[in-house]
Length: 337
Image (cartoon, rainbow, N blue to C red; front, side):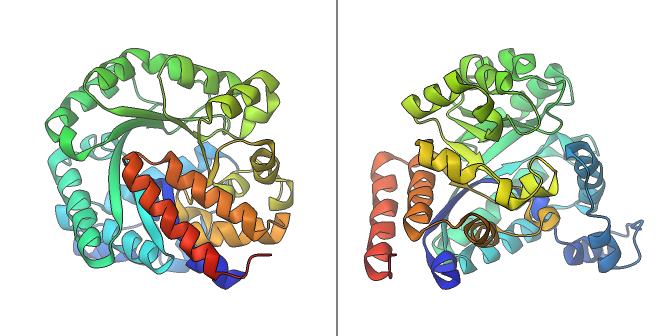
């Protein structure tokens, strides 16, 4: 099963590139840029990854990305993630980045974008990984700040497929950003949004009805609203679920209590992703391994989630079908239980 989980073709739709900053790279970049970290060792950084909730994680997350200063830093960060993705047979990835977290530190939008985008192009050539870039607005900041960031992004519209919404969910409902998302859709961007992780099912409804999202990032609290579950099934609106993240942030008490298998078997378009893998203890294969071991998922369950992932991408219908055909070919050669 572990070999099967490692080798099955995958798409990853919920990965914050800043959240793939491993402690080793944090120290390397800090040294390169002459930044003094409040930690003495890699182990001390890992020991700090003891989160009680989303906010306690975000506090460390934003502090850690302070080492990212130059275009080369953003390239190295993205390239490291893509190497891991290639090793875990990720065929396509749609990567979040948080420009406001950098422009607020005096790092120009162009520097952030150029480093990340160049790595994505190089990964396409070297590993055959296709990719898209998604700009996320920080919801704890103002809608005006988000609108200003959207305006900054317009010259790069050809290389950014969608806009999203992340950061502190509680007290920052999707409705706060309706005007920004209206403007983004007018400009030709797809839209996605984090909702229903710590926030209530109402936030999922808002993201769908007010922001016009193509998929919901997280969404695990949808189970609390039967009408919402019915709607998500009927419309096949994808949920980009991040199991290790949910456990680390205490959304569920244990992996055995995670509802991803329940949601899958109810007919929702559930996908598996790594969120912030450095902070939450694993990339996409590790997420699959843990939910399979804890919930007794079959190979058919895993296949369905991987198929959902490819169907939920922003690839063209023809590109989606090509990826699913590769997945089907893999399954035909696998020992399916």
